[in-house]
Length: 320
Ligand code: NAD
Image 1 (cartoon, rainbow, N blue to C red):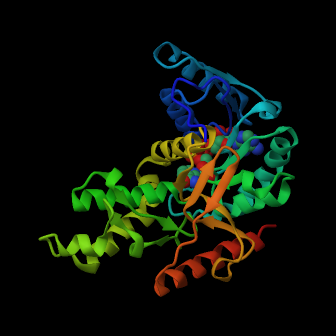
Image 2: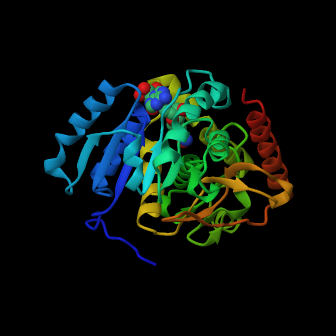
């Protein structure tokens, strides 16, 4: 397994389709971390892509050598990764699922053009509703499903970990917790598998002198589930944390790190779920999905996951 170091980014080319709030934050994160040698920006609004390329390029003196430029779908030919953030974003009060028909129409234009040129690379879908659009992209593309993944609940798993970490006053990196299912209102926190430094949460709580109870866990998860609504209400979009979440997924793919991340992947057969994409912990490498980790869940978690899968399926079937 080849694990790549930061400076060794020679052959990494990433194409970003959609340079709005999310695409631009992701491009900035990529540049700061020196992950790619070449970053190509594509947007329907060519002037916007040009402006972002100019702005990012003017910081090249301060980061690892990279090229940032505008381009076209032909640039996908030798890209390791194509990241799609193009499409409408939620307005205050709107759910992710509400965006489906607008964004499916946009994907009908983009995905065939990406797949026509992409040779070996992976497609990462970020646009919402991400699970439905990931499955939809697989349907309208000629690429193997393992090479089209969605960012899924990577962001909400990170929100979950950071809120638990603040509550328990432990470094976020030592809090292991996953949100699975839809990236949206029906997502499922896997409380039964939360652990802090390898100690199951229930055991950790017994050794703690605060008595928090179930009201605290409900409040923590509610803050995760409503995070996007809260942020959109205040600043109009969410962009920095998703930029970092996408960066983390990118690193695992282009460096073949084989990290476990809750990306949105095809699920067929697990608990009777079939023919949809949803988030489960997945090992990610340079060819996309390496292995999906199907864990045993508690009965109420299983029930919630099946409900979430049903909502994704219904939305997928409702695409015009
Ligand atoms: P935005 O409106 O700021 O940007 C969207 C960009 O897409 C615009 O620049 C627009 O010109 C471009 N675009 C539209 N149609 C296009 C086409 N056919 N070809 C190329 N480009 C096209 O939106 P945003 O805030 O950047 O959000 C983008 C998407 O990401 C939304 O769907 C949002 O809900 C989603 N999002 C996902 C997550 C996640 O965790 N998966 C988190 C935040 C936002």
